[in-house]
Length: 383
Image 1 (cartoon, helix red, strand yellow):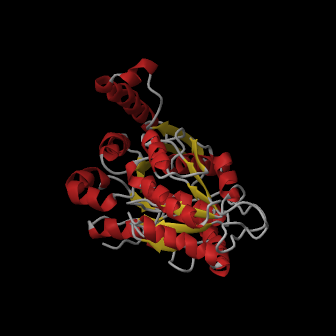
Image 2: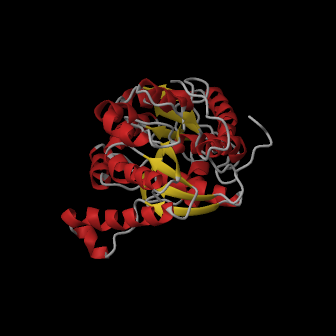
Image 3: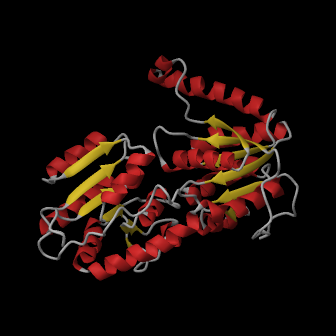
């Protein structure tokens, strides 16, 4: 990579994607990327795919609310495509692709605007199996496809689409260790510094794909061994009432559902945690895992999708099968009983997190943008 390469001068970008609230992984990445690009002197116009309904009462009308959001969105796309040089489209699977990503690509190409598609969904493989032809109709109109992991590069390559890996970015000034690392003493659930028992954190929204129910069932097994253990579930979503009921049925104590948490508050929750649980059933490159690593928190995660590409079992995290509460509990109990292992995971995790700082991501994105605008040779591809 040419160290002297920079973003094209006077570049104007339309960044298309979700924005907080809610503060999900893709929304946070969209917001952070907009800020980082602006810090480089780039004019960035954000086009929000999850904009509030206008008028507000339209949110209560199931048949009409999609059109109340979609029509203004299409108009914003069309207008922006006439003002900017490049569309950077944050894309996901399913209807999100068809309703938001595909129209953005088409609008940009009709108005002779370059397009970079930034696909980030964890369910890419089944989506491409079902919809490869429809995806190809629009994706082939883009100048570049970027993905945040080698896992997604492989998935798209197998489907015949060349992709370039541009990692997620993380603000290491915000997500950082919070002080001396606590270590729970085996057998009594109390920390060596005489404080409370081990503090566990789940940082995923309350949706079926993240299987927070398995995290709760794991915590029941952990709390049977360490009665003073605590669990914080940071996120919002449709399963809140169901998960609260499950916590009651399991007889759990010291479980806190925080609801929606912004980035600043989320960073503080990581600093207060000893171990982070990620029980998702499908995943790509979860920001929550990267944030935990950067915060010096030991990670226990399911080994689904792109997670094994992100962390290595026994070196930067402990990985278990999805939907297996006992296996997840055993991994947590092992970390509590083996403080040296927990410490080695934390140290390796801190080093791993350095790969996601802006200084490392910037030159790759510069090359992608210049290629999309026809200012450099085409990027190397697998196909």
